[in-house]
Image 1 (cartoon, one colour):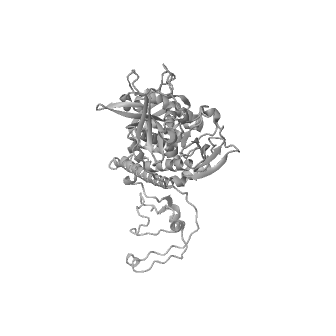
Image 2 (tube, rainbow, N blue to C red):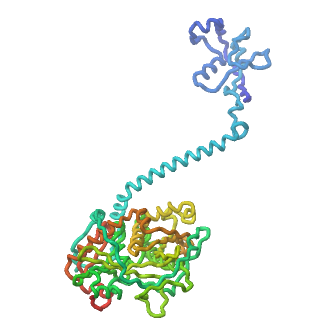
Image 3 (cartoon, helix red, strand yellow):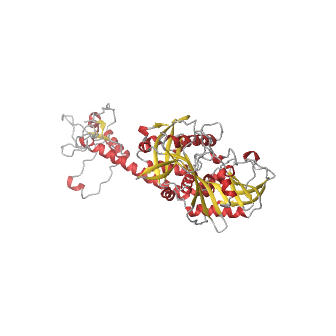
Length: 536
């Protein structure tokens, strides 16, 4: 019971006695009219409480009774309405709110029956919020996939990227090809033939397939092993094949993959095209960005622009190339047991320690007059059921989870698909190029390593968190890489370059627009990049 609030008695002048209430039976039959007679203090407070709807109750206390009535008005007494003087001397103002009842007592303190329902209700609310969050996330994903091409296009146009090569005033632009024309191309090539197989391969260590973020391995450094990035016209095997007229077009798998996946590229790139007689050579410049690996190229989150920042596009590309080389050698058995081919490594000196790599020179027939020879690479071999399978080895690298929004150490074991989906969004061009190179080399399996920094601010030390294998054709389907479209792009560029006069040209991906340009350059352009020996 709430304690009563006592109001001191106030002296009020005498007023005429109020009229007696009508008999009980007349209350239901006669309309109730408001009284116009002067009211006592108690009656005034009653009227004020009714008008203001305030939680106030007036209790008339009889002098001869020891307790107040439970009702506001008690019509059972003989003298229901005492005189105003009596009212003024005996009334008191108390709180009119009803006393607290047990069923409204907080359930987690008193009501034992509902005590067990509170956690359940909280769980239901949490689950409901999770469902709403999932719906919102699914909605955002749908919007992203619907607008991804437009968003990438807007980002390419809005971002300011530098050209991979400085365009000189004396260069003559011959043509520019928008990427929209590449997407419509399609061309089927027959199965290629192997011309020459060179180098040697070490066996893949299957224990790396069992690596997890909780059982990570430190990435080792292989400073004594030599890795060769030789351009097309510096390759002695290609020179020999060209002199024997084995083909009319020559390139490397890296250059072909760059052309095949051009529509997915954002950063600028370039390659040199040399028209010599009836032959066509696709080259890269020394120190070209084609020797590096782009990072977050197709991400919507911009990277720092300062070149000396460890998370700038250039710094990350150098770091990624370093990681990729070391990873490709660490996952092998280095016990001296290797598979050697008929021809040795064409770029190694005698006694020199070289990385595990095999070069497959393969020839494709583009038409009756045009054949293409490309040098393709595989990095390892594995023996399954007494059959040898060739592998390509590449590594994705995590530099800071804040940029990707996915922490590999937390998600690789439970949500590996989500991690790969994020990488496909942020590194679509790089993954497509690796897949294209695996297809060109006819590799049986492509291994992808997940390598992360030990600490986001330490770009020298890394750990291997996982290694996953994919069949190249299955992975190409998964990332929507169409082989017919890949070859359609190559065929169209080859046909265009075959119509050019003898000379040197540069194919440049525009730094700010989805298109490529062809420039005619002087014969001595990039002369420091090439040997002086004339082409066959």
